[in-house]
Image (cartoon, rainbow, N blue to C red; front, side, top):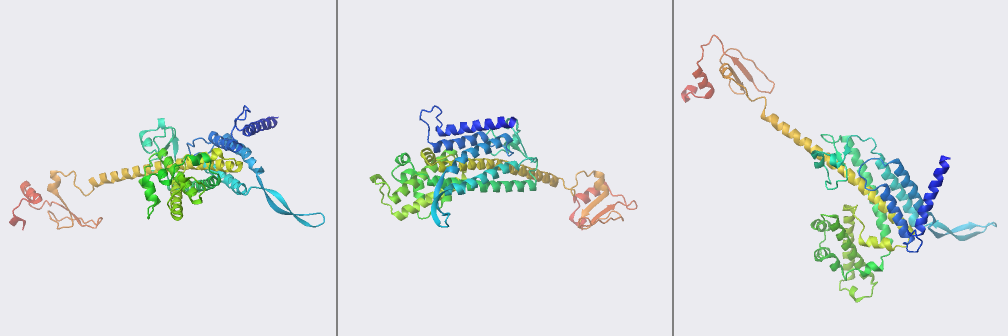
Length: 448
């Protein structure tokens, strides 16, 4: 009975999801909804936001959220099973003759990328599960963290992110190595998701509304400084990016928008798709192609340096006006996986940064302790009394000055230590003579 009730509720939920998709997110039925492709893209994006949100800790996902994600993403991806293409095939008739027919097959890009994205999805969830039971580091709420923990925080401005607490001296070498392995694995997932997303976006058509908003040439889009660097004979993209102001996410996104706009302008001029006089240019085809390749290189470096960057104006416009349901599914699924991978990498970097701060603090404390020990070395006389100076003579190396017939030799430090005690048979030495002997108050002739 319980199982039957659960199945009915699941079926009702699935009907609700697909009804909303069919109506284009317009539940009134007034025909004001968005296209099916955009509705499906929004559905995958909203599902990921409700399940993952802002990944705040390196810990396994709750089982209910994990089950919700796997169940509902399967519903949304099932649409791609019916996006097919016709391919030639052979069929044998009853009389033994062979005839060529056309059969349906899932579209090639979906056939390759959907299983790949599912595998990347499972790898990210497994990575979070791997942090189960890792007790060498823990999290405390930012409001409850002490000053030392706050100082070890990589992003102190993000008050909603819990603060990482590392044991004194840092993590063990084994844990540090294991965390690095997890980071490398997630980084590979991020690169794969970014590659799929970039490929899908490149296949989407550029809407006319975006083209109409572009300036007349690449210089106007990039600005004089960037344009001069790209068109220079010697071009180094890393030096150019390092010289630009990228201190905030807004500035990086603005730079990305300008680079993408210049790429579109140069590509359109190369294919001479637009007959407007405003698109004409005196720059040769070869140089324009070189400039476009350099801008593409800058854009690629920018995407790898800032993987969690919001979508650019070109990307948003393409997704908004896209009519291909298959492209919509691939783009949104790869984008949410890219965002999740970037969030996990940020949390791993938080732990590694806090560990480095703890290691540096321990090294500084150890160095300070060594300096204090050097100030109080064992070979220094710190509590000699007047009686000690009158009765004993301690020297290393050098010639021993005898006051008695008793000697004791020690080789612990490779030097000869001679300790002599005043003999009662010898004449009693006066206090003045003692001072003259220890302080060097005798005349030069007396010393010899």
